[in-house]
Image (cartoon, rainbow, N blue to C red):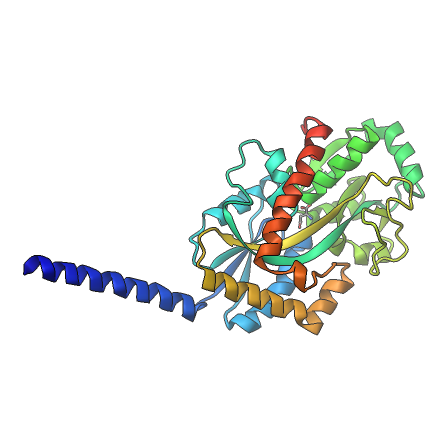
Length: 327
Ligand code: ASP
């Protein structure tokens, strides 16, 4: 009798738990959601996160709070995001660096981007530009190539740490040119851009969303964009193909990830909130003005992002290996 009773109690308790967690999933979110940005405030990842987060806050009915956590080219914060409790209250704005290039750049990376995260969705494609301080002598990309090759010992290149987009795409550029300038790491390309504007560093490769205003205002020089088409946000900047360096193909992206094992109903709410943000006219306008390429319906959602992460790891791994040692 006692045994039956305790079994019945155990069953009831188990049922209660199941019901409790199901309710937690349906009622989600009940409190603020932390959106980890793995770079400094003011840079491209931060800006894209704040724009998307603003609109998602409205749909979710709870604030999406940005937490900037810097270090190791975004991999420190990504490790934290991968290990966070999978309850939908901690998510991350990752990118082509943290969730693809880092695999080849860090042999002991503490997370597997395609295994330890549950994709929420692609937020924006972000073409990469080659930019330099405003008084850098070369007039165009052809002169840039000649100048950098001839003066590399005296030049330095800014980036957001090993594993970042800026590091990886300039690694590609430098390996095409066969040069190894001094490399100066920052906690994000927000601070790197400030150093470029003040002339403390010579050049960098960065996501367009960080650069439009400064290129238009003449505070920095842009030599080329690493995509097949020019950007409507900076129509005067030639593509790398037009400017004579077609091997420099560099398009990055920003996307939202949750830790793996986040319950499906919670992931679906987050993906839906992102989808609504990407359909919102004002949000689209803000992202497009910065030069983002917005995903169409087929490019959105969990499956499309899972496929993108896999294909980007496959694309960048051989490029990084071919570029040789990174230190
Ligand atoms: N765009 C940067 C990178 O190079 C990161 C950032 O500050 O958003 O990865």
